[in-house]
Length: 225
Image (cartoon, rainbow, N blue to C red; front, side):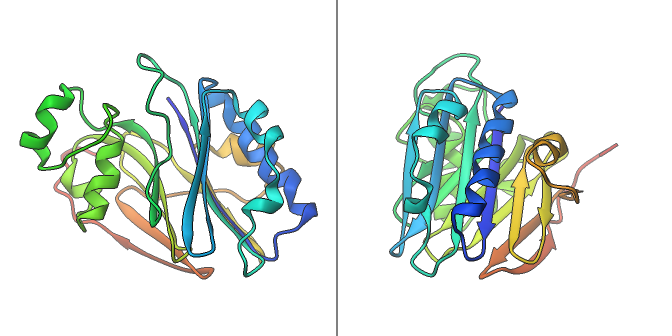
């Protein structure tokens, strides 16, 4: 059980800081072992992550540093609950792409991943497989079916995407000046958000320059109920 966040806020300024801090802190119910963020600035995905609870992590941050040069904020966040290895925290990211994931892709040894998935990873955390699949233009919902996943991604073009399957929850909210994703409805509500919707299963929602689009993946799934 981990927490994932996707956050886009127009004209990000000091009055928005409480919302961002609240989202991270309220997500701490999903885990206290590590916290991280990937945000876009100067055409690059910048990633910060530390093995500390979200409240300590977010209180150390100068959120003005996360603001994009266009005045908006684009970021994804991860709040980790670890059942084993405390290394390899999220987000998994390059300069052009960042990924946060709640769920399990593989319980097999990392030594088998190249043969099983055709993907090479730098860590022993199976969530990295999602990053590597996206780098190759593959669709994780199809490639890793029936793994469990709720995912938010961000790229250097400031595009945020979110998707899930039936094994993990993911919720959203929006207004005239923000679009938000979080692991549970309660996280959004406790952060002061009133309208909350649930991301449909196998639907990829994309937020590109605050324009929203979505499409549903055709996956052969038996008994989704």
